[in-house]
Image (tube, rainbow, N blue to C red; front, side, top):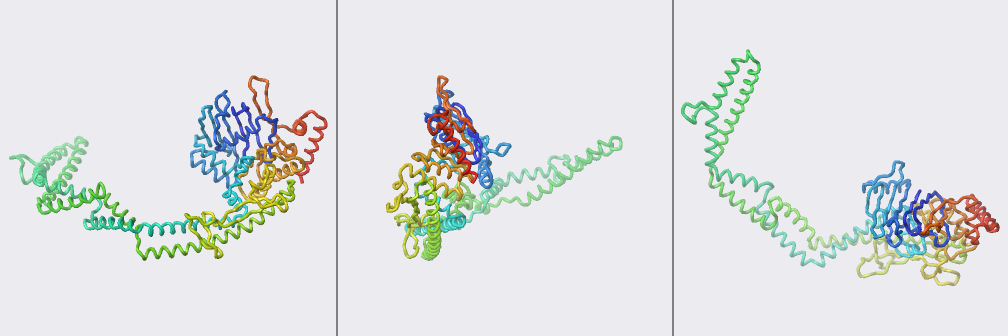
Length: 585
């Protein structure tokens, strides 16, 4: 739920804080006092379009801040997404949101203490809040929204079926598109496959190995400089080991180390430190002996082999031929070959593969058709239940003869969509099934069944939408519902019924209502009033909570425009008593 909303510098609102509660929160006030700015602020907080024209010149920016307290699975989902993006909840578990809009039109968003794209606010808003106003009623007039709402109303088993259908549909479309592409581009695919085969044949003949080029380069360098390497190794061996003198009467390194070690050992009894150094000289002599042996082995292996050098030249030339055509180095050539083999499999247009794909297409088409039929039947059953429930609600909203019907119609066959057969009829299958859903209104007996937007007046449409929302309330969706003057054009007993149904919604949802009807405001669990302040040079508005006597005076003002009228206050108190009795019942 939304616990708190602070608005600064937006329209006539200078700086005000709305402290909201669970249940039904009602906002009232004089015309022009700024009630709509509250809804505008909510829109901004949850990612709506920023209008710089609504920003007050002083201080030159509008700021909307909100505190959300989430629970259950919704909390897990939303907070996990926020944490992934770098934000975090407050110490008490609540989530802080902020949106700033400057007078120049620049906009910034903060979620969980971190700066984030405005789209993150929209993502959160889609899950926690739904705004219903005369303009927002267009949401439920869209066929896709009507189908989605009916699917939610149908229940969790239906949604599982829909998920299974979508997975099958995705596989089916993939096979359909793949098969069509292979058939349509068979010649192009065949040409590309031939080129890949030529490349793979050439690479296979050479058979390059990882790291081979570097190894060959090093070996070639040794063979090319074999004589110089031999002389260097031989002279080093002569200097280290006895047997061949570098210069006449010159002792070798081993002899010199032995002489030094023996000399130090002779005095080790006097100073142990010299004994330690003698031991280290012995280690050095051992190391030099090892090096001498390795030099001897190196000389034995070193061979200036012109034939081997020629083989290396030829091999490296073959590898360079591959790197000129396919990649920058041998490793790249090997990768190219692996990718080419994968592409070659994808380019296959053989009759055997096409036949196999066609069988898979037919198998999946049967599954899609079967699942589509089950979806259609489930939607038709849910449509009957939904129509009856909404019609009952309309009877209580002073539309006793009106009836809402839900038409579940087959999707017309189009040029760009695959089709399936359901009950012998060919229909187009989409990602949500083979149905189109349309809400229709019969305003009175004998009236034609028309789409909502054509069959209802403004006041009727408000009541129809409220009835639909009451029915949908038990079928999931956001926990916070905002109604912005959906009671426009309504009065009398119908207004009382609207208040009663909003109060019913508030048992399971947090409801925020902007209204001009006292019959609706009387059902509030918390009543907030937007009031103008014209004492300064600039008119501003603020929001305050009214209770008891103040609340009765506000309802009297709404009833007759006379907050101090004894008759108006008496009528207001009667309304409050009736509403309280209804809520307790």
